[in-house]
Structures are given as structure tokens and as C-alpha cells.
Image (cartoon, rainbow, N blue to C red; front, side, top):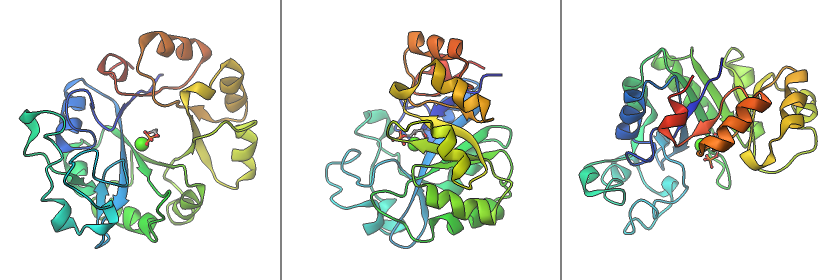
Length: 239
Ligand code: G3P
Ligand code: CA
């Protein structure tokens, strides 16, 4: 079965990573959603991709971890997208867990570079425990050291290894990392048939990012990928 992820929610229809983006993705009957977590200055988990707010609001001059939750929640992160979303604010992970039903798989990506958020992994696991959402979530990161912590403290949560760069035989790296990796998440430009076969031979699923055009998607499916991260509803609604 192919498992496609709505990447940051449905980003062509609503401001990324927000409640509205998740709701739009759900309207398409999506099976899985990806989102990014970081920490505010007062160590609250906030769902946002960039380390800086400027892409979402030109008047926001600081980094994510230089705002308290109360401060960051006053920033309009919807108007940049469309006037229809002027009331949109960044969401906490807890809020989004309350919007996304339990039968939808959530891939939580820990953003831990270039800023290292000390303790983000524990805060994430505590949140998932408190919200009773330890099941049907997977955790990924470009920071594989973060994943080590997750594995030690929550060994039942599937781990996804994200790769920003081209790695020679990443499946061998995954094996030797000591991590109990479930899936490899490569940049789409690094994927070919041999890549998929190599990962599969060692038991790893392959979920490339971010696949938005149908032609590339169909090629990847032919090569046997297990799913993709996509901004395109026509792709992420396919199973
Ligand atoms: O998790 C897949 C993808 O989201 C990783 O890259 O930069 O979009 O977070 P990025
Ligand atoms: Ca991401």
C-alpha cells in the first residue's frame, strides 16, 4: 500500500503547518500528514518549518526561539497567504493533535538545525504521552542524534531518517547508526530505482520529499517507493 503525506498540511490551500492547513488536508481524505516542530523561548512546542518568522510576516523580526508562546501567538501568519486567513496563528502541537483524528498517521519532524533545541525530544514525547498519541505517529529528523533520544525513551515509535544530501548507500548508514529505522526520507532528486531497491533490501521503506508533479510521482511509484511527501492534494489524497 502506498502512503502519501500531506506536507505541512495542504499548503496550496492554507498557510502551512496551521490548523487550517490540517483541516484542508483532512477534507481530501488524506491518510497521513507531516508537520514540523520547534520550541518557543518558553519551551513550548510550536509547529513551524522556518527558524525565522519573516516569511510569514515581514514585521516579525525574530527567530522562533526568541518569542514566548504568548508573543508568537499574537503574530498573524495567515495574511501572507491570503486575506481570508488574517486570523491564522501558529499552532502548538497539542492543538493540531486535537484537530487531526487518531486514525491519521502523523509524521512529526523535529527541526533541530541550525538551531539546536536542547530537550525538544523529551518535550515532544511528554506531549504525545499527555495527549495519548503515542500510537500512529512517526518521528523523523535531519538530526539523527535527536532520533537516538526518541528511540531510547520511546522505542515503539517508528523513526524516519531524513537526508538533505546525497549519501552513498544510506541504507548501510542506517544499519550502522544503531537506530531502529523504519523508513528513509530522501530528497526526491537523490532517488532512483537502485536507491529504492537498496533501501528495500535492508528492510527500509522509502518516502521521498517533496513530490508535487504527477509525472515524478508516477515514476517513483514505478520504482517502488512506499509513498511521498507532497503539497499536491491530487497526490497526497491517493493511497
Ligand atoms: O519530512 C519531509 C520534508 O518535510 C523535509 O524537508 O525542509 O520540507 O522540512 P522540509
Ligand atoms: Ca518537514
